[in-house]
Image (cartoon, rainbow, N blue to C red; front, side, top):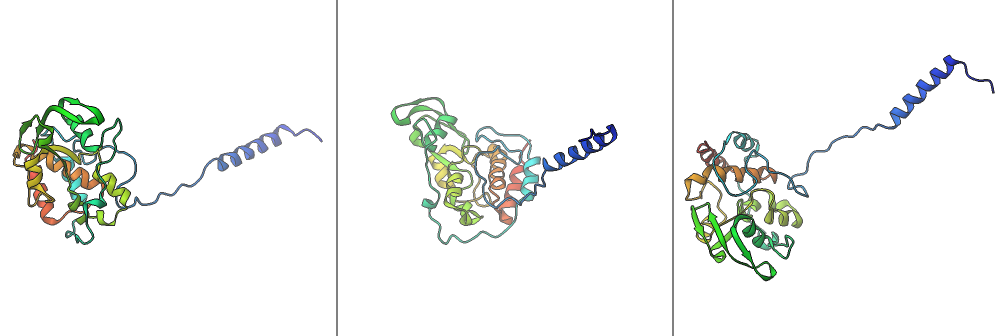
Length: 234
């Protein structure tokens, strides 16, 4: 075989490089994100705090996220039971979700066998009270399970509902006094707000964060109430 001239060698080398580059690339198309929660963990959205405690801050980002939520009438409660939102689940180290939240939010928390919380100090932000007996605390779902059902969770899988009920990444779970949790029930901000008005800003931000992440709808009355609460942010 005769050796290639320099000119032909250059042409062939360029052609070969072009083929290799084309073979190494592909056209990746994106698909719309499905409704409902995604799997795995993620950081909080809407500019709201990812932990339940604290207060204050700006409501600007949360207001923008609130505007992006779909406004719709509350859905039917047909078929709803709390059993469709499996809780509490294991969170590791022998603790279930309730125990893990109490450990996370308390001070000087002492834990016995099987992660039983024996003592500590907790601040109930809903009513601005300090508590020392873990039996005086409930773990509140920021967006109640029934409220989630009415705003989209009725269409989720059991696994998605379990994630929602045990979500320790977003501000969905908070330790509060029994009295305030029971008075709240499954109400949204249009019919119930924390007695501690100083917490309204954080409460609204947290509510919006959860609804935005899980792509839940809001009623017009709920949106108006959240807007009023964000007005207290400084």
